[in-house]
Length: 357
Image 1 (cartoon, rainbow, N blue to C red):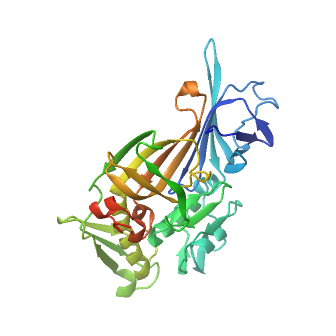
Image 2 (cartoon, helix red, strand yellow):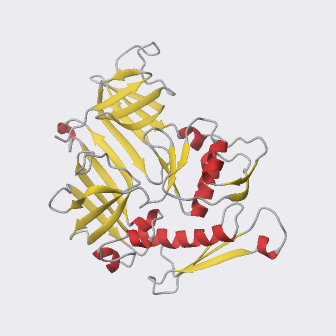
Image 3 (cartoon, rainbow, N blue to C red):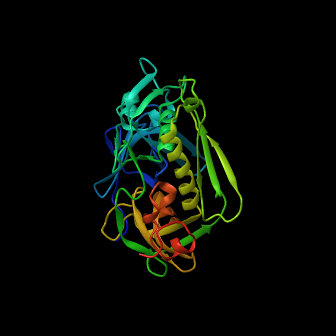
């Protein structure tokens, strides 16, 4: 039985009159999102208007939390025979994504990314490092007018980590491969309903040089910071120079260059796979921070893959696949995992990582 018992609570009240629901979670998305399609009745602005923008919404599946957030948009439409509404929801992290960073001094000293995030979290979102160690940053200056997410994203990119929206609306600071793996595997002819793939050299470079400078100091060590990494899997001359955003140092420049090489190498192998239901073989909801083994001859993929994003979908069977998930997958290196996480025959063939198990 793959159909999920989905619970939608809006403004503290259970809502059951929806026709379709889609929840999206991604390893590169600090906020989860959802769309409900409904034939909501009620007066225009009365107490029965359930999904007024800003209303708190919780979505659960079989008792497991999927999203806690707020209504973004209420979009009704009608004709002579029907009335429908599409409701867009994002998790609590939307406030950090949309709102400016506010800090008493504009400078944060001797804190790691988690500490900086907590200092800027005036919204009660919750930021926590998951499975990784973060280095302290001597000085971080807030850019005038920048949003909280813009500030944190620059630092995350410098350190090769992800800001991942969690089911409770909080944000995990993590890397692929540091949060375990899903039970079972995705196998052609067994549990894959639909699939497409891509194996590419786009975005790959023979070398990546990152340049940057400190936000203070006038020495060569402060003004001319650079580091170069090479990708031995690229056989032609294809260099890339990247200018680091904001204040940086040599350690962060080195990390940024290595992360860029790993990310482009990992992104060269990707797939979109549709499966029945919302859970793995152990009954756990698909999680964009975890790994899963993929075996598909026609996709030419036989290796561990990282879930880059997952779209949970449920509607009546008359609308198509009913209850299903669309999993967007990449080689784990694309999401910050080390090369050893890319286990499998195709990882060796495509030169992305660890090779045979």
